[in-house]
Amino acid sequence: MLNDVYQEAKTRMRGALKALEEDLSGIRTGRATPALVERIPVEYYGALTPLQQLASISVPEPRSLLIRPFDSSSLKAIERAILASDLGVTPNNDGKNIRLNLPPLTEERRRDLVRIVKHRVEEGRVAVRNIRRDLIKDLREFEHEKLISEDERKRGEEELQKLTDEYIQKLEEVGERKEREILEV
Image (cartoon, rainbow, N blue to C red; front, side):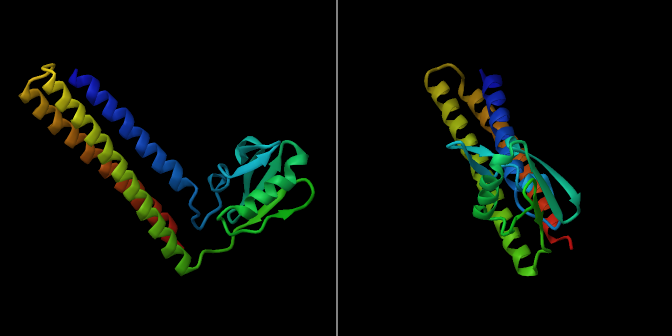
């Protein structure tokens, strides 16, 4: 019974960590990376589709991205989606490809991005704590239904706390790594 709770906790906390990593990959640093634009939603035949499903994205130079649509009719839609995104970059359309030239980040913009990273890490911490809270509630229900003893519940809560601390530490490390990346000139 307790092992099932631990497995569920690990799975859900790992999911929260993965969600944070994916979320932070879309935040711009000083270098160009396809992750900046991969998840931009593009209106394609009436449905919102991630850009990575509509085009190949490459990095020909450190500060530029080259987007080659698989279907040339989607070029205008991709261009509109990039303009509507919060990237703050104007796409250059040559009729077949879209080039994005990323200007260097200003000090003020870097600070704003670090603030955003800290906020997202805090959201990840809250998610992990919510998982802990839900599972502790489950343990208490199990104890109330006489499925586990009070000692097992306490041991389970301690294990969940250790797991929570471990995943919060991992979230912090991911956030610090992203902050260093942003502040790197």
